[in-house]
Image (cartoon, rainbow, N blue to C red):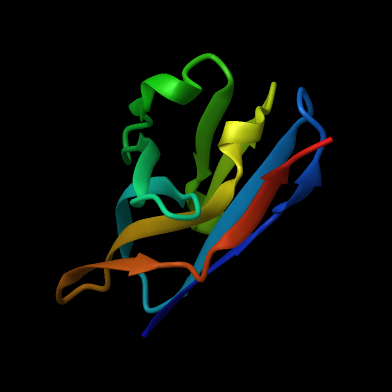
Length: 119
């Protein structure tokens, strides 16, 4: 059993910053790709950023240069540093972690954390 818990969302003014965290716990041998997604009201969930076990990163065009994804393998945690936030960044942010428990690999999702960018 693996649990994934996000934290760090909230209300921020345009131009502000937030840092999201997502920690996995339970039966974990290794974690491959960690990722952040977001879903705004009335829109489909979109991929925001990914990071591999080798620390290779990739970003959606809309967040390049403003968001930074990083990971701490010792803590099974992925972070999303969000700077220069815009109202269009408002969404529920979800993380996913591709976990290997020694027997099989599965993708586990957090419950989501709300980010609201508004003055």
